[in-house]
Amino acid sequence: MLELEDIKVSYGHIEAIKGVSLTVEEGEVVTILGANGAGKTTLMRTISGLLKPTAGALRYDGKDITQTRADSIVELGIAQSPEGRRVFGTLTVEENLMLGAYTRPKAEALETRKQVYELFPRLLERRQQLSGTLSGGEQQMLAIGRALMAKPRLLLLDEPSLGLAPIVFKNIFKALEDIRQTGVTILVVEQNARQALKLADRGYVLEVGKIVHSDTAKALMASSEVQEAYLGKG
Figure 1 (cartoon, helix red, strand yellow):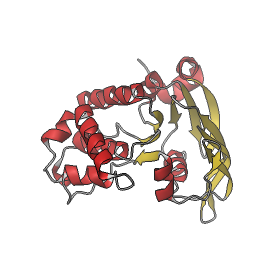
Figure 2 (tube, rainbow, N blue to C red):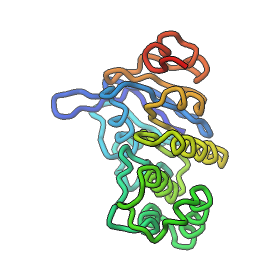
Figure 3 (cartoon, helix red, strand yellow):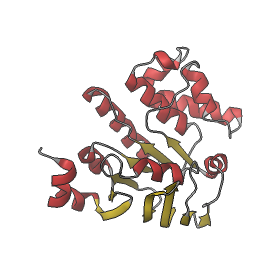
Figure 4 (cartoon, rainbow, N blue to C red):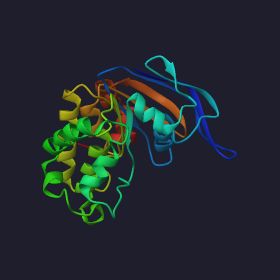
C-alpha cells in the first residue's frame, strides 16, 4: 500500500532523514521505533505531505505521491493523528470531528461520526464541550477520531500514548486494535515500544534519520539489541 524509497528530508542544511526505505502492506500494523530526535515525526509529516523530501520517492497504491499536496493525500485515503494531539481548543468536540471530514459528503460524515462515537463513547458524552477543556486522554481520542472522520485506508499515528495515564493508555490501545479489526491499515510511531510491538505485525527502528533494524514485531521483541535500547525490563 505504502512504499518509501530512499527518502531524504532536510531542514535547511541539516539532513533529518537520510535515505529511509520502508513498506506498509494493506491490512498491516507497522510501527516505527526510535529515540527522541531520531526523525520519526519528520518521517510521518513527510508521508502526510506536510514536508517534502529532498530526494527519494513515496508511492501509495503504486502511485507516486512524492510532491502531492497534503489535502490531496487525505483525499487519497491517508490521514494522520499528529504528535501532541493538536485539537482546536476553541471548537467543540463535534466541530473538531466534522473538520476531519471536510473532504467527504455530509451524509457519509455523519455516519462515520456515529462510528467514532461508538469507538470512543466518552467523546459522545463530551460532544458539545470545548476541546481545550478535555483531559489529555480525551483529546487523544478526539485526535484519532478526527483522523478517522476522513475515512482513511491508511491511518498515521504519531505518539498516541504520549503523556497518558496507564488506564487511559490501555483504552487507547484497545481502540487501536478495534480500528485494526475494521480493516484500516496503521502506521504508528510510539514511545512505548513494548506496547507498539504487541500491536504491530512488523517494525522498523530509526536512529539519527536511518533505518537500523527491520523485522517482524516478534523478532524485534526478541532482539537483545532492541530490548536493551528500547524495551527495558519486564
